[in-house]
Image (cartoon, one colour):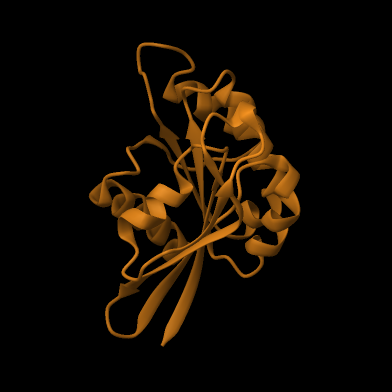
Length: 175
């Protein structure tokens, strides 16, 4: 069995756990605990990782890992990034400064992004309010990064599978 590692990252509440739960063929492993930080706006938060799997035919499997969203767990980002062949950055458009949020993940995962594939997914997108998709694309271009930027609802299995398809196409073209 050939296994590939895909990493989901993004802010607290962006949908990493939800995306993995939407597509995993096994019951996902989640390390959610009660939050001690009232500013994150949710009862539980991931403190180590999320894990799920999806098969690609009979001979390949995607291992899906989700990072914790809080920057205080950034040490886990580096550990989880090891060996990853692709990165999905989830950006919560409803947060106060989603462009700044994107920059945090582009900076922290710069090496992985340069060596692998990447898709930026804008979640909870309100297209009538800035920043617009083009703003995210322009922000990435300023860092000499050109990757797909798409809106998606990570609760929807088909949309999450489409995100993975975009990532896999990039992986194939890099080989």
